[in-house]
Image 1 (tube, rainbow, N blue to C red):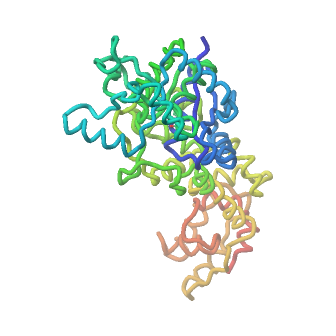
Image 2: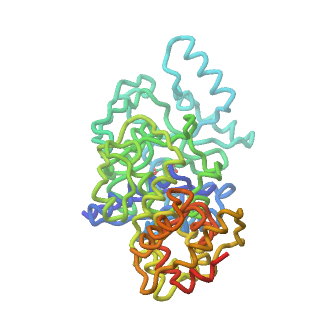
Image 3: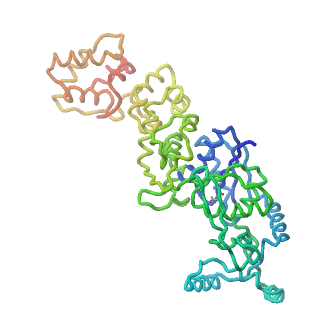
Length: 457
Ligand code: GLU
């Protein structure tokens, strides 16, 4: 069977690095097994789901390098869920309940005070037809619960019922179905909670591996029971640990600053995000991985830690610099051209400046400096101005190459006795207008003798 995975975001906000982790775990898993990747929008909550967020998620996945084979929207599949509901009702596995939230809370407290597990006691199963009719007559609508298979003959005498699975990430897992309440699948207003549509889709779309955050581990017990109730073999499951902020809070789709889109706009390279999103919280050390293929090789879901991992945005900057500093010209070429960096000099220019860049887009200002000179005309104290006069009078003859800088500065040492910073800094400022930047040995051949003379203060 072809490995089939899905990434199932609700389009209710922008995705962040934690969501990217889930998407990438699925994507790399599919890649490793020559499988299919489904993008499934969990948009049954039509009030909170927005097209603009769905569009944003598609754009962000594309930017990360994730290319879904299929995209589906749950909002277009209500008929399928309705059919599953009818089937469960016929099987007697979906039952109506009329309790209010207050009533449930009261009962929960009573159970706790009696040292009973605070789960739903299935009181609605005891309602007579007459009582149910009375609720109907009052115009009260029921919500619907799935009867978990955690009893022999008497649903009011649940027994420990273990569900086991060999988690792709966490190894062997056990959940006791007697430790949880029968999950509500359909709300009073007829809308679906996440549990049923997800299982129905996983069956219909042939999903073989459900890989998601470990906040879903308990759901998995109930979902496995639901797969079986719908006469389907459950898929394999994998639950990865979640990412938190440095101070330990969960990431939220509302924390706009850490959204994938804002990182893209800040000039972070997609592979910096992918490297961190995948390798953090695993036994692999975090480093900047150049390509998705290389990352797939390093990806080993079972090497993921079981506790939450702290995500430090500063680490992204470090990875980003590492990627840019080693980026071959061929890889940067088109993006540089879009910044106006093109022609024969583009490649030597890139090789000269990349080691100094935090973001690829910063190449544009260095290109202007090399082509046109300092952004603002530098001003020098009298002593430095006198030194620069000597320097510009003693430029080596052409042709110029990487050795020219050394030849020139060795000569200036002899002539002026200057050395170290006193020698280099006025030259750097005269040539570039900045105190820091690429190696002058690399820049000089790009400026040429004529270009250098044009910078004479
Ligand atoms: N929409 C669910 C979520 O974002 C999907 C969970 C799953 O992958 O099953 O949590």
